[in-house]
Image (tube, rainbow, N blue to C red; front, side):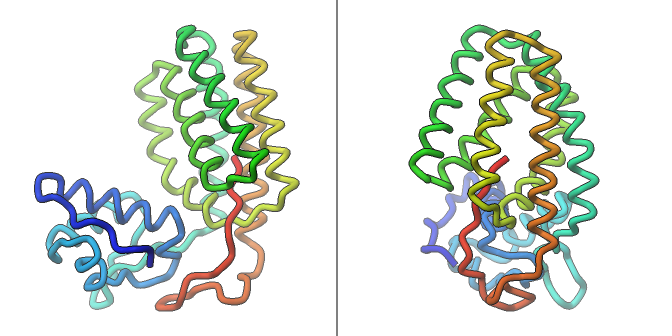
Length: 242
């Protein structure tokens, strides 16, 4: 477990508990198959069992935890087959997002996207993996927001948590990290030309390549020290690129 978090303020109790627990799962701090330590989390977050269990019900609806009778909450396992199916849908969503972003994004938004990409490249060059992963997520979210399509945004968000967790659990090699940066360079060049078809196609291709890397990593035998239910967190540091 990470260093104790500050107790959650009562005014935002439910929302904050959901956000904190979601982050723990997505970051791999609570790995797949592990029983959620309710007593420990209540102490760490400064909350009672009631808001914690309300938060777990929300995360259950997102597919991140499983509520099992007489066993409490279990962090949901990651099924490579399910992740592969989700990525197939995400490919189409990324293509649509890129196409619509070119048509609907403002000059100010494209300038912001350029700045975010520059930051991404700098973080890659510095080997700042966690920072890179965060910026990468923000770039893809920015592109979806620029599409100006609420239905697309809602559908994308519905799959984002599972995809994000799969990426966070996958250990990529440095070669894939470089490939990912190169792919970002490609679709950013298309965005600068406002080439809607090319941007959409390159984003879809980037998503497919990311899927291959993630699923391959998830199907590899667990490294020594990998956790099972009730176990301890692995020491492996994930390299997240996508």
